[in-house]
Image (cartoon, rainbow, N blue to C red; front, side, top):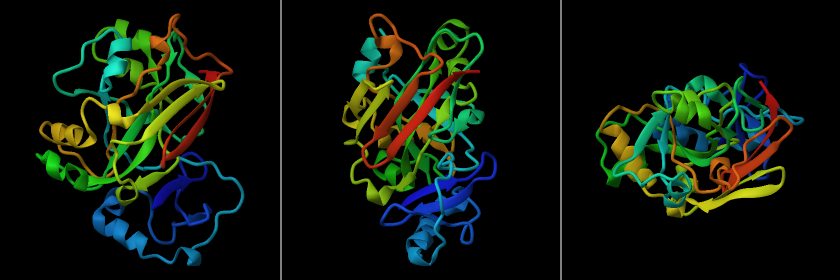
Length: 280
């Protein structure tokens, strides 16, 4: 299934894509794409629906973040060997963990704002993992059973804030609009292998990132298991699993986003995002 949320900011309704790509309104069935809806029973209930009996959403509505009420937005750094190399950093012995503020979350096609004082706003296409059930001390072998689905994430970053403003990376990762997710939450049954998904990102039509989850240093299962040793994961938590090479910081000379730029990014089977860039 491809689940989504649509409508005005702050008033998104749950939806589902039917077999011909039309959005069907789920608001008469569930309140949101969050919480228990993302568990095995909740998703099974949605699979049993007669989509033809659900109202079609007319027009071209705004698509919101594909998950509502996200409790934790957890990110993994330096998870692709070639990206670590372009960053001038060694591969870590275990996953590098940081957080983005949930206030950074927005819809996949909403406008990205360059924060005040920014000189190095950068892009990162990433595979997002949405947790579907309470997860604590889970083994790698069972980790994927705890996944509700997958989505596209643009892990936008302000490199100067991230690397030169003291403390952890959170400062450079959490500006408003720095967390577009979606367009869809694609349930795990539709993704045969999360470690074999081509991905790309373009700025103004130029392809900077052209990678695959096959080159991850730590697999999705490893990341989930690792995180669950240090914190419980809850339904609706989002994990962004790292980016392949081609970020602006890795260019020679370096290239960063500026007002008027337009990004497009996507992952096979998970859809695409398109964002215009403005000064915040």
